[in-house]
Length: 295
Picture 1 (cartoon, rainbow, N blue to C red):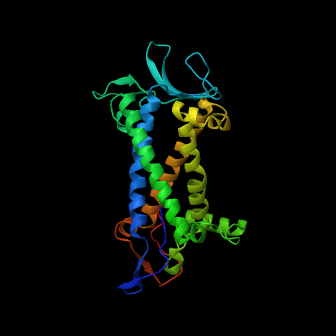
Picture 2 (spheres, one colour; picture 1 turned 180 degrees about the vertical axis):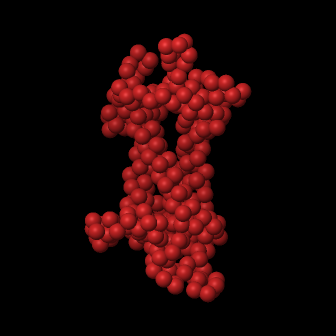
Picture 3 (tube, rainbow, N blue to C red; picture 1 turned 30 degrees about the horizontal axis):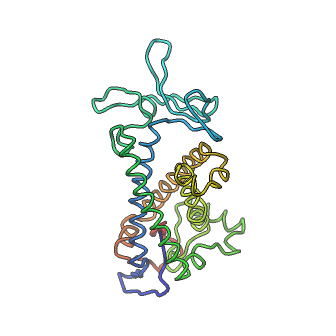
C-alpha cells in the first residue's frame, strides 16, 4: 500500500527525466507483505471453499437447502458429467475450468477449482484453514500498521481523500477517458493520485478490507461467542460467508485491474519504485506512461 513521503528527494536520471524518492521503506515492506498475504488468502480460501462450494443467505445452509450460488458437477443425458456454476436459476457450463477439472493425471474430476488455484494443491481442509488463519492475522497486523503510519504522516488525508474538484462528474469522466486512451500523467502530476485511483483505493482500504475482516471473524464460533453482535450485523453466519466470498472476488478484481494498469503504465519503472523507492518521471510534456501508484 502506498504511503508517499513528505519530502521529495530527486536526482538526475537522463535528459528530461529525474529520479524521485516515491516510496518509503515502510511502504515497500507493507506493500510486499500485503501482496504475499492476499495471494495466500485467496488461494487458501478457495481450498476451504472446496469443502462445500455453495453460498447461502441467512443463518444456516446445508445440502438440503437451495443455495444462492454454487459450483459443482452434474450428470448429463448421455451418462457423462459436466461442470457448472449456478447463480439462482441461471446455470453456466464450466467443464474443464470449474466444477469438473483436470486432476494431476489430466483426467476430469469433480472439484470446484483446479489444483493450481488452491493452497495446498491437493484437497486438505485442515491445511487450508491453517494457511488461511495464519496469513489472515498477518494481514490484519500489516493493515493496522498501514493505517497507523498513514495517520501519522498524513498520507490517508493528504493523498487518498479525493478533493471536491476531483469528485465532480466532469473530472471523473475525463479521468475515465484518459484511462481508456492509456493516457497517463507525467512529471509532477505523476506523483499524485488521480480521481479513479483515489476512489478505488479508498473503497478498498476503508470499505472492502474492513468488511472482509469482519465477515471472516463472524464465521468463527469463538468470535461469535466473544462478539455476538457480528452475526446480527451481517444477518447470519451464512450471509457473512456469502459477503466474505463476494468481497474476496471484488478484491481479486481490484488486484487484476491494478496489475493491468502497472503493465500498461510501465512495469519496470513501477516495480523498481516499489523495490528501491525511486521513481523516474519526465518533465517534457503533459502525459506519458508512468508507474501507477501501488495499493
